[in-house]
Image (cartoon, rainbow, N blue to C red):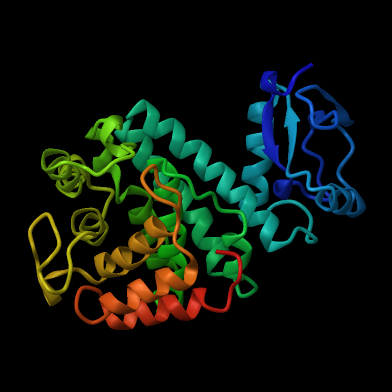
Length: 318
């Protein structure tokens, strides 16, 4: 059996107390061959996870037909199920895997109703996690992906929005709505050709104009819905507006921009510059902080910037 015949899963999602209910496979040395590592009914033990991590093993594999069972396992962990010994990092990893899987599917199928429904459901799970008294943002930061896929960016921005909103004192219900808005903020990019989104060189004027239409496109696709609030729609429409009027699609200034959009714009920039892009390497955290501070008070809301920096500065994982 070979790895490319199976589904790779992250070791960080595995609980030492709860069995997935499916066989786990591992690579044979550094080859593409795999062998049985753990039977379906035997949960991982703490020493097993420690051995895997010490060997630098970040992935195990499951059979294709076990995908649904694994997703059910992840949802249970992310939603707070399993034993009390499951840590925040494992719950964060499970949440991230579920969100990426659901968003990738709904974005690929361009199913608007499914995407909005998924955002509503996933935002509740995420809000429950990031508003917990024992939640540590670094536990979530460690398990996040940082590629240039639109669904990955949307997931990361949503997490960041939720963490920031909670730190700014928003209620748990508003944190949930803000996370949902973050998941949907770049929905308008689904109308943009992949050749533009993944272009390795500099965009020409026509391509950049196409990019600049995505907030309006996303807003128009969602504005008729009765299950989204005006505040969430403003996150979609205004997350590229800037206090000094230098943003798009309208060029709004200062108080014309909704507070949730101001929040989203800060973490949207941070996520974009610290993630891999086809045309550049990611910035170091310190460089991204310098960038935000340069824009603080002129293009970006100063209070929001400083709150976000206070969250990310103590960490060493992003």
